[in-house]
Amino acid sequence: MTLRRAFLLLAILSAGGVHADEFFDLRGAGDVNEGTLNFLAEPPATPYHHHQNRIRLTAESLTTGWVRLEQCHDNLDRVGRAQITFREGYIRDLKVESSSQIESAWIEGPSVQLRNVAEGAHLCLSAETRALRNAGGGFYMLHNGPYMRKFLDGYYPMRVSIDVAYPEALLALVDITPAVQPGLKVGEAPGAISVDALFEGELRTLIQFQRK
Image (tube, rainbow, N blue to C red; front, side):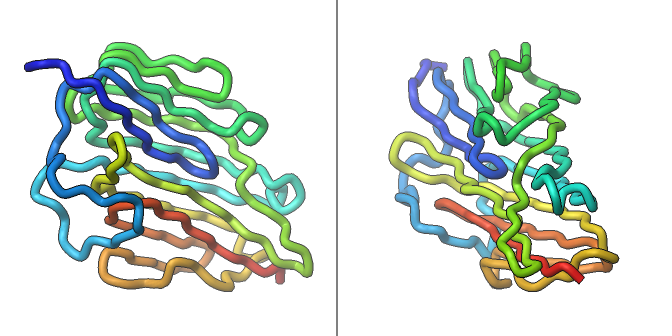
């Protein structure tokens, strides 16, 4: 297969992203989204990236803003080199927990470096991120994103799943944005929230809590 060079950006939880070059293939590069958020009621016929986040808030998070993160990526695009970057000062204890169909994956500062990612690769990370903001008046905001899968100047379909566990004795859920709609599902249970989105473009989510 002829080597094609391109650029991919897959933005990760609270100001982090995957950057890659040396692409072997660009799937479905005909009609592309140019950045407008567009939820997809039906999944595309071709494979797409699934980005999963499990976030745990604790009583200490309300003071420090730090939350625990477990993050996995399924069906990564085929690339020669890539890096998952996080905002410096907002990530700590970053580790590669598992990977498959990736020749090597290692930590460099606030980033994970990847070499020779094969079609359908899988990667899991763990870390702590400073993602919870005290908005004052007993309100707290958990910002996630922007999430995107970007080739050159076009945006391609991806799925993002976010599962949040929080101390129910301390916090009450106030609101989640964007609102539920075709392509975006929200689930609630005592001390837990889940968001599942299938979309093109750039997605940002906001979960608001109030202290009890």
